[in-house]
Length: 138
Image 1: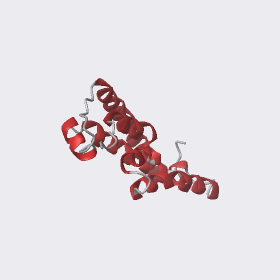
Image 2: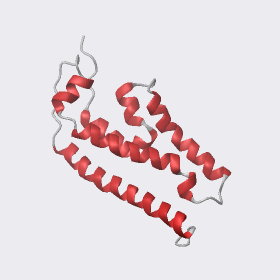
Image 3: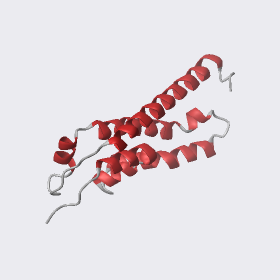
Image 4: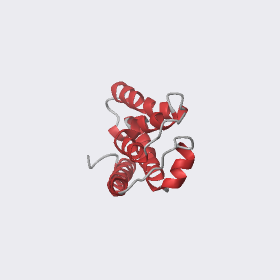
């Protein structure tokens, strides 16, 4: 009997859109994935920090979610840039099907580059603003 085929395009899309809460990890590894639960825990952790310390800068209270989003952006690249034959050897050894990812994954990689770079620059700019000026610019 053939095992379920893991779609590379779907995994990259899940990582791009909902990677900060670990949905791509649950798709690939199942509900027992510790890193997926760590991603998922970043959302309530950030919400609790925002509620507990409303006077703190948002960068400080939402840092678990921001770090999770940055990690998911890197994971999106790892998924999307993996060659199809290596993808099948890793995730679909017994599915009996071969992956054939085409332009959608390439478009996701371009969008992820824009998203990840923007997020990283925003976090760095705000962190330096807070460290050097005490948040005088916002």
